[in-house]
Image 1 (cartoon, helix red, strand yellow):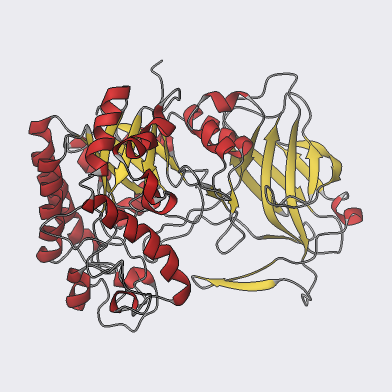
Image 2: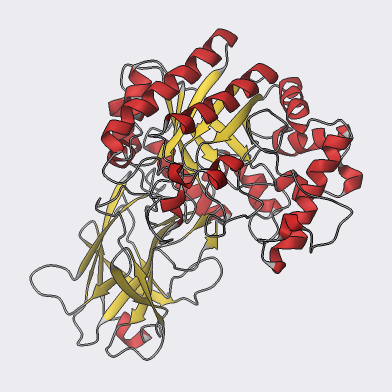
Amino acid sequence: MPQPLLMLNEDCNHFAYTRTPDELTPEGVDALVDTYAKGTRVTDLLFNLNGMRSSVTNSVKQVFWEGFDPEAGDDQSYFAHVPDYERPMIRKWVGNMLLMEQRGIDPYARWLARCRALGVRGWISVRMNDIHCVDVRGHMMHDRLWEEHPEYWREPEREFESPIDRALDFGHAAVREHYLAYIRELVERYDMDGLELDFMRQPYNFRAGHEAEGAALMTALVGRVREMTQPRGIRLAARVPGWPDTARRLGLEATAWAREGLIDHLIIASIFSTSDNDMPVEEWKALLYGTKVTVLASLEYSISPFPKASMRPHTIETLGGTVASYLERGADGIYLFNFMDRGGVYVSDALLSAATHLPDACAGPRRHVMTFTDSFAPGEPQHIRLPQEIQRYGYRPSVEFRLPTGPAPVSDQPVEVRLGLENATQPPVFGRYTLYMGRLMHHDNEPLPDEIACRLLVRVNGTACSFTRAVTPGAESGATHAFTIPPGILRRGDNVIEVSNPTEVAAQAVWVEIAVG
């Protein structure tokens, strides 16, 4: 069996923000690649070089530092539409980008060369529709095309409702040609092993209801990029929504791209809110059967059980669980997004080390957490399973969950169901309401009392699980109560959790996980 691919994405401003001017030397630039690639299992490094603007000079997009004066104060016109609290951070990374330009250092050329010297494939990653800060006209993140042509926005006639309304509409030929021209310059400039088209920043490229006719336009665009890369032996990858129907309904016909030989790798992903732990890899593999296109599961640095819930950084155990599950389901590799060095509270050194040594990290204890899907086409059913109220049972169990858990545990590994249970008695006294796409969710209530939780009937694959203990929720888990799964019950792949409530007290599940080992 071939070694799984392990790809890691470095975004366009992380390096400039996390380094001091003294580190902006050729050796300091090269050291970033060493951090990710030396002595690790990383096979491919992808270097993103744009949002709306570009972090390298070119004739198509404005560079991030255009209009910035490093000698002027924070009251300069460059910061006119930037909130005060953002200005020191932006000054640092934009100033460092400008400093590298003044020193004649092209970090991307150096990173690609260093990758090759270390035997790792080096890629350029292009964000196809970045929408950072689109709620503020005139923000320094915006490119001239977006600012001067609101008619190119996805929903130009609306007042601001959502950032995705102000994504660019690729139904306009000028938008498509803008990106093709930018990509052409990059392909001609850099000696890269691969080029990624990142459609997850953002996947909303056409007006609502116009995605079907947009699909042909986007397929033609991908085909034109393939014509640029193929003669140079450059691999082409696309990062798209994790569910096939969602990608198709958004005008991203990734299956057609694979079958027409336009791409070499397909990366299935969430947008940002969480790692999606249940993307249907096996469906993608079936759709792509007969092609040579590999399918990789993209992981975010965080996990979250439902929209607007607290985001928790991955732990080594949750990372191992997610990866073990995807590899068992047939993924050809793992793609790490926002797993960057010097991440502080987001990605610790220990977590980054574990991530760059996958799949070795799957061998230890692992946790399989129920998350949600944060990308969906307009009007499409959403894959959001929590919060879930657990009322007194009737003819069926009060609630049911299906959770993929990868390989079956070995015989001596202890396994548990861990649930985050809240008191759902009305009217709520604590907690908060979240309205998300028409769904009203109430959460952050009081924990369900232990004397009620221990009476819940919890089953895994039809077998009763005994109440084990109360658990204190924290930074790594939202669980409040644990139940022991008897030996031999947890199966390879999907496992079904049933929770029945024989009491008169309404409960609510806000966290579901299975822990192995």
